[in-house]
Every structure is written in structure tokens, then in C-alpha cells.
Amino acid sequence: MKIVGVYSIKGGVGKTSTAVNIAYLAAAAGWRTLVWDLDPQGAASYYFRVKPKVKGGGRALLARSQAMDDAIKGTDFERLDLLPADFSYRNMDLLLEDVKHPTKRLGKLLKPLADDYDLVVLDCPPSISLMSENIFRAAHALLVPLIPTTLSARTLAQLGDFLAREQLDDRLRMLPFFSMAEPGKRLQQEVMRQLPDQYQDFLQTIVPKAAEVERMGLRRMPLPAYAPGHAATRAFQDLWRELAAAI
Image (cartoon, rainbow, N blue to C red; front, side, top):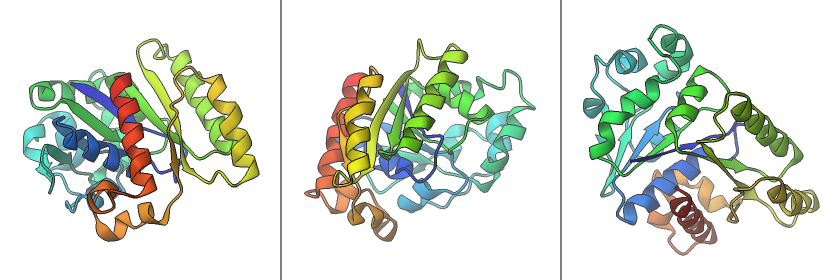
């Protein structure tokens, strides 16, 4: 079982749309896939038409009084399940402080699911926190969406520095890619030309900014399910192929 965190320090970069579409494409390719919506805002849960609620909340999951199997919900799509968000996840850092080995708890919770899933996609909240460190230690790769701006480049450097400082960069692949890109903007062109050379595993796919992606919130389903021929769908398909090859 491979675990991929879709992660960014910065919000508003297309993280949830990436997680939802990549998970859908993985399932369509035959991978038994689970999305865990770790963001208390519950956007991924909303896209999959699942109520963002876990019995007992995050505390029950961490204490293992709520079995992961019982919390997982099916979606409308074959081979694709969801572990929903819960508003209690906003306090997850506090809850983690009360358990043994707090930086490794997420990985221990996911380990028993290895016989049931080929891929787990973690839709991560935007922060560097105790929860983030759990994600970094559990995941095999971080898929990092970046809007092509200097601020996004700075947050990517901060993430790389953190992983190196915690000695996580040797086992965790950081896979940045450009998201919500508008190649017609001169500054974005400069960033897209220069930044990939600074990172060994920078992916080639560029996901464009598109109104159709924003309509996922109206359709409440992954983009490839209702707009299979759209340019953004083709970009997500390319991104999935790059990710599958990397993990």
C-alpha cells in the first residue's frame, strides 16, 4: 500500500481538487483507493457527497475506540472509498499530544488497511504542525501543488528545509508541480521556467487554472467524471501517470 499526502503549507493552491481527481483516476486505473479527508473544512468529503462526520470524532480514531473500517464510507465510484472529515480534526494537534508516539500515530492507524487498499490519498490541512509531521512520517510521497508565484516558491523551500532538518527527506519524496497556472502571465512564466531546475523531483505536469475545476463544487464529483475531455482533466491524467511512476 502506497500513501501519498497532497500537501501545501499555503492554502488555496488546488490541493483538494488534486487529491479528489488523483484518487478518482487511480481507482479508474484499477487501484483500490482510499481518500482520507484530514482537513476539518471537509471539502473532499463534500465533493464525494459524504457527510463530514466521524463517530466519536478524531479522538475516537486516535484512541482506536472507533475502528477505521467502521469510519470508512463508500463513494459513487468503484474501488474508491472515503474516510470523511470531521470538525474535531481542527483540534488534532491537541489530541495527538495525548497519545504515545504522537508523530507516528497516523501511520499506525493506516497500517492495518494495507490488505484492503493499494493507495491512500491524504487530503491535508495547510500548516506545519504535529499533524503534518504525522503525515510526513506516514507517507511515501508528498504531492505538492504550487501556484507559479514567488510566494509559493518560498513555501516550497520552507517545506524542503523542514524535511531536511527533521531528516525525513531521505525516505519521503517531495513531488512539486504547478497548479492553477496561467501561463500568459509573465511572472508565472519566469517562475515556471526557473523553479523546476532547483528540485530533483519536480513533476512536468502543469495543471491550468480553469473554471471547470471550480465547478467541481457544483457538480460534487471529480472533474474526469463529468468533463473527460477538458484540458484540466488531461492535465490531471498526466499528473496521475507521473505520480504512479514515482511511487
